[in-house]
Image (tube, rainbow, N blue to C red; front, side):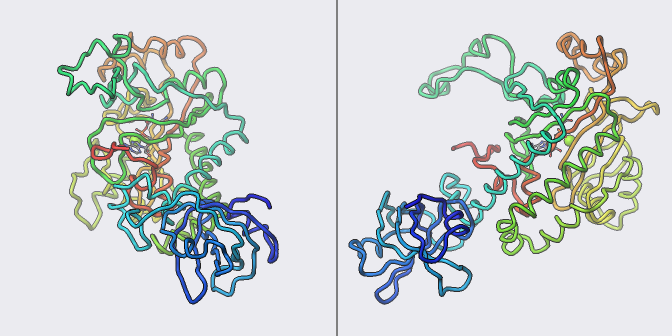
Length: 460
Ligand code: 4AD
Ligand code: MG
């Protein structure tokens, strides 16, 4: 008897073949002299129907199984008369590995996503979250394949850092903490317990270290967790999120946009081709236009628009926005969505933003007003990628740091890369959760990350 994942049992098994499967009970339905168990082990959306009949020694126990129980079933696969499944498993033996009583909070009915967030440790066993996390896993693996094929070096940049890459003052401070003795209960917080008495925080981006690696390995990428202490309660911001950040030496903004476009399209086709069952589920249950939209993007040529033109288009828009539109102001989510959904009707790169609204490291353009920045906007999500060509000229970079209040002394190691063997270089960051939102149609970032960290969610 081979032990197999349900997915494998279903795709490789034939009527009459014996198999052993283990998983969690999704539902139990009893008929006259028969009991049907919907079993799932997370390997596929479909799961497997187990048919139990009174010849089982523990038939009564099996009929009384609760949703959420863990069982191991041995039996013979047989053709299923039920619609929507080719095979079912006729149980010869059912072992109850771990029971579950009626207090199991996820009974077989539709629960709201809000409710499921309060049981993030159990929602994993639902259809929707099963599909979300299978898609997430598959896409993460594809990210590595994409870059490996192109010879990009994968680098692990530090999580604890003393630099604030985006210069937005949004680092979480790192300090030692004994959870058994919470400082609030224990009197005053002891700040001498900061990272060996040094001011450090959790990284907001691996870019600066990534740039150093690009200046040695040419093409590199990071894929890791990043943290932002922005107190924004929106559906697309999390305090902890994962970012993919490639960086290329000897590259300009155009090369950067080209890479971002092939990368994004590749991830779209991967989802369609390799996560078909789950994407179909999202298309039916969550977002009716999903597949059509991803298919269109996978084969589209992405529009590229100057920031200045974007502002003009927004000013002419026949809708009124909540936030003002003016050359020099940052684009808000409503503006981004208008541009990608109404003006372009697909993904669009916005290029060359005013320097005042972008980070110190972006390359200054000859007009003296803009920097070589690019954001990729997509329908439903808005900004999904942010990137730029970097300022490689030592004097210009130092001057820009001083203007924006970044101490050049504190980043002397970064400036060294401009002192010796500097090159034009460029890169971007793709927010992994926003990608998963885009590919699943899930509308809240809290529902595409296993255990969301937002101002109101950190209990797990
Ligand atoms: O535009 P951002 O801030 O750019 C950077 O961090 C650059 N250092 C990247 C680079 O050039 N290497 O962030 C990049 C992307 C955004 O486009 C968005 O998709 C995602 O990261 N992102 C967030 N995702 C979830 N929650 C948040 N709070 C996010 N902030 C940014
Ligand atoms: Mg950005």
